Amino acid sequence: MPEFNWNRVTLLIILGLVYVYILDFLGFIITTILFLFTLLLIAGNRKPIQLISITVVTTVGVYLIFEKLLNVYLP
Image 1 (cartoon, rainbow, N blue to C red):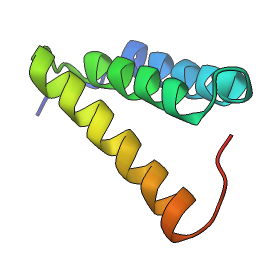
Image 2: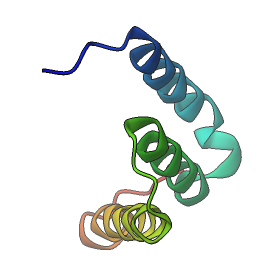
Image 3: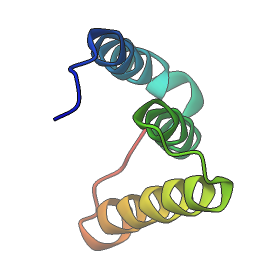
Image 4: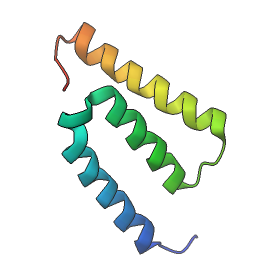
């Protein structure tokens, strides 16, 4: 079993707090793409195609579900 990495946990907590702070300034789409991209990098994913595709598909999917299907407006 891999050793628990407190530095990585601390980075993820800080990343989450920064995400919440800048969400109103940059908007949902830009902030979420940056957040997911950085989150995947911290988690160890280094494949550029995967990084870009996962972040864009997830962000657009969440946006479409909330904005179009549920009529919940995102910042």
